[in-house]
Each structure stands twice: as C-alpha cells, then as structure tokens.
Image 1 (cartoon, rainbow, N blue to C red):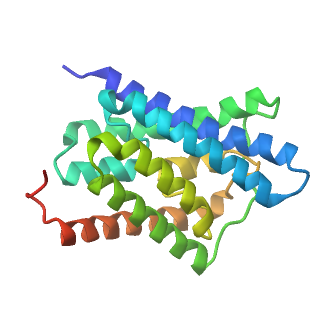
Image 2 (cartoon, rainbow, N blue to C red; image 1 turned 180 degrees about the horizontal axis):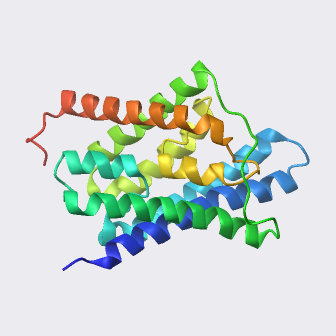
Length: 218
C-alpha cells in the first residue's frame, strides 16, 4: 500500500521551503533600501531557520529530501525505494511552484510570474557544482540526529561563499524561476543550473564513497 503521507510531506516541505526563500527575499528587498548585502543576509537567516525546522518536522515522515538530487542519490544507495522516486520528484516540483505562488499571494504580487534575473557564466555554474557537491556530501556523512543542523548551516554559509548563492536543488531552481523577485532566476538560465547541480551531486557521492566505501555505513 502506498503511503501518501510521504509524498504529501515532500510537497508541503518543499512548498514551505520555497515560500520561505522567496518570501524572505521579497521582504528583505523591500526593507533593505537597495542594500543588497543586508537583503541577502536577511534572506539567508530566514532560509537557514526554515530549512532546519522543516527537516526536523518532516524527516521521520519522508526523509525531508525537498530535493530531487537527494532522492536520486538515496535511491542509488538503496536508502529510498525506486517506486517512491518518481512521486517524490513530482511532489517536490509541485511544492516548489506552490511555494512561489504562496509567497506572491502573501505580498500581494501577481501570482504567476517568470523571472528576468540572469544568472549565468562559468563561475556561476561552477559555484553550483561546488554547492551541490558539498550539500550531498554533508547529507551522506551526517549522523541522522544532526542532519538538520548541519544542512541548514551549510546552506546558510554557501549562500555567501558561492557565486550562485547556492541553489543546489533542481526543484528550488524551478520554483525560483517562477518569481520575478530577489531570489529569481531567468528560465533560460535554468538548464545549465540543473546540469551543474547534477554534476555536483555525482561529485558529492564520489567523494563520500572515497572516504567511506559503500557497504560500510554505520
């Protein structure tokens, strides 16, 4: 029997995460008076706190992936059954869209948008490789009781040490494509981001396997 709660948790968790990312970006841009640094700092803090809470809440239901690449790697490691993968990914993408639209509704913006914010270039793509590799490596290496804290801290720091502000998630990239606000990304830029993220996920898995060979996990 299919446990629909797993898919609902992924949908709601991804929606809440994107709502936090996009909504805090809208609020930060409004209040920062053009100071991009302050806006990014505010956006970072809100994202970190939301991510920590959401992982804590949904981890025991679905694993709190909120990211197709996390689901993919866990299928590879046989920590997620293949039959769940497709539905996890669908739930994550639907959740990402719902999160963007919810943020728009809360700030009285046009609900359906496409971003015009260009994010492209070799350094940006490389940043996404690094950001995603680090994220996947941390998820795979973290003790289960500390995943939420370590992932939230890593994403918060990666907002600042990567040139792309660390999307590291194809579903999040899709959701951010649907908002023409502070955290958006132009649709034309999305395919390259997703390729970079997939490359980073594979690299993160390779690094994990190098330090802790598959089959010897605790």
